[in-house]
Length: 260
Picture (cartoon, rainbow, N blue to C red):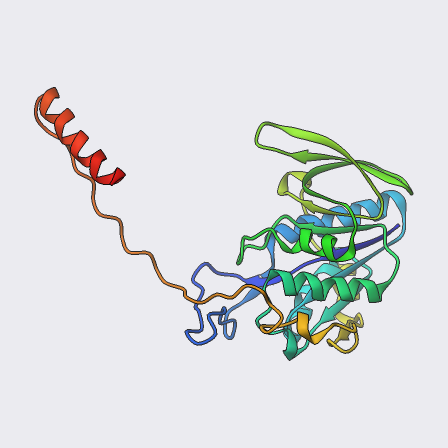
């Protein structure tokens, strides 16, 4: 079974700073880690490999320093790693990012399952995984909490919902986005860390993956962040006093102002 895991390196802090010119995250000087939700995707991919055999390839799009996240994934049991890195990718929105990753996946070749975390902690859009499946024209199941069965032709999974879960069958190849309820990620072993330290990581540019430059980076992104600001503090509430008639009258005035 050939499994591909898509991960993202994110800032290890909630105190992020924004470039006032580009309206993008300032990552210089900020410690970065694997997106927490992606650690569950890595763990599930390694568990599937242990059950069915095969290979796990981990891939990320980012600057050269993102190879640190890939090496950590290798230490956790992934077999191969690909870094998709090019200045032309800068400023990509979720559509351009998913397009770029889909091009890289096509270069990797045949696969059975793609696994992503449900969302990234810095963007919280949950759009890249579904976007990859759309670009590759393969089925997707989001918010997967358990993979029950996988064969050469189909997979059966439990998809988490607000009311409980759905049991979904899907053709293979397909893409899953997983939630933290699916497993408990392992810690890297000493053997895994030694292997990851010396592992060769393939680095691919836009030209290497044959990406159309019209669809990548800031210029290829159909959405733009035009303004970022801190919402003003909320005004304090008003405690209504008086008898029931007075309170009801004042409440009616307040509600009327809100409706208007």
